[in-house]
Length: 156
Image (cartoon, rainbow, N blue to C red; front, side):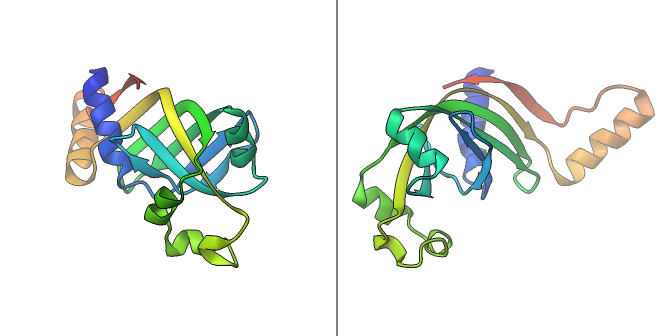
């Protein structure tokens, strides 16, 4: 189940536009994840001096939390942050969303790229739409728990 759920995790992450990143035990803040299945990593563009930047410099632990009903996906993932001084990767990931936070654009001195490498987590990959509604209706008629998707612990 873990391998199937891990595959589902990376697949669903393609549709996630935001989550909450907590670095080194500091308060979680909204961040836009850019998942890369082949690298088994999630990239974030952040600002110099942010909790994510400070944690990445020290190789700190972090957690990333997703609650995305459009993707029918929920997760609490724990891993390590590290600095990514990779200009080519930053170019690949740069977007108008990232540009909105940096007045001087891609070359702003405050731009930092960090890499989050998950080591474990808990994942809920649910069904959406008609299948979800059917399971809820069936559960109410039969007093059985609805089967709305998969849930489990994942080790990356």
